[in-house]
Amino acid sequence: MLGFCLVILFVNAASIDYGEALTKSLLYFEAQRSGKLPSNQRVQWRGDSALNDGKDDGIDLTGGYYDAGDNVKFGFPMAFTITMLAWSATEFESQLNSKNELKNALNAIKWGTDYFIKAHKESHVLYGEIGEGISDHKCWERPEDMTTPRSVYKIDEQHPGADLAGETAAALAVAAVAFKESDSGYSNQLLTHAKELFDFAKKFPGVYTSSIPVADKFYGSSGYEDELLWAAVWLYKATKDKSYLDYINEKSTSCGGTRLNFSWDDKYIGAQVLIAKDLLENKFAGNESTLLNEYKKNAEEFICNCIQKGHNNIQKTNGGLLWWDYWNNLQFVTTATFVITTYADTLSATKNSLQCSSGNVEPLQLINFVKSQVDYILGENPQKMSYMVGFGTNYPQEVHHRGASIVSIKKDKKPVGCQEGFDQWFNRNAPNPNVLVGAIVGGPDNSDNYNDSRDNYKQAEAATANSAPLVGVLARFAS
Image (tube, rainbow, N blue to C red):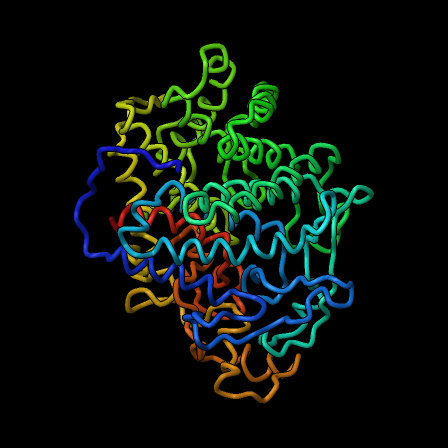
């Protein structure tokens, strides 16, 4: 495992129950499940859905996750979600275990990796999307009885997508590390798929949206080099195969520079931080350390920018929240909190501090900064609102989410039609009948304001990629 012994950095005691937030953050993934639900399903308002995915093409593509508030399975953000969940489970394994949440975290990961195995039937073929955003968004239906098309889209040698294949390889590689101790056979299976997908991505470059153009409006990709690097780092961690380290060294002169954010589209910071942590722990030989120092420099500059001590500081709201974008800003906050937390712990364990342009920063200062961001998300903000649904007493009531906003099929089996869903449920000025417990919505604007309205998808829609990085941070704070 990637965990290591360290002196736990203590933050000031607070009334926020991080353990409860952790439990709820993992419950959210069960609400996003597609396919045949298991007997131990805890989110009871959900039912089986999309049981014929892939059938018309002669392949079983059931399972996986709906990305956000719609009923499409987008492979690109789903893979990033699983990568971050698995990084949480490897980095904070002992903390998750101490809170009795490790099994739930592994179950959440496996729901995604089982689907990726199905989607990767041949070494150079990967199914990357089920359903289609435009037709899906024209209807407001529960996933259990949706009537929208379940078209399937794939990448292959003639229609490549190195970003999609690379991110899926990364997800499977880090998941292989997560399962190594509890299920070595499954771990080996994941690693085989990860290696094949990385090979596919390297040999057939290009962005996946050129091959699956219907995804471009929803999850367009800005490039594929970051996913290849990210996958190589995780494969090296999982295998110690020097060929992956050689690839990382080759890319050290074009390792992304100092990035503006870490997200489902841009993985450079994740790779940079992983390499920087290994450098702090002296895991590379001398000449390799020199080559790889550029990764560390860029990782540290990003962290310095987040904590307002860099050359190009990230904007903050008056209430103290890091601010990137009007549309789903919290996705960037949760990823930033994760990389800062894991880097702070490595700095502490190796008795180092962070050198920023405006001064030296101790690990405890980094942890306290992360705490300020997490506490803001969980209710310590100008609105006194928790942006985790179902946490605290004041949280979003009208989350932009089809399943949560329509009466549960367990309570009313009468089908809800495409337009009927808009008329009776979407336009209803009332709380959602089902609480999407643990979901992290898009969050407030740059003035710390939040409009709790179902049609306000830029603020009120939650996504799996928002929550996955927070799982590890909450485990760290809860223990």
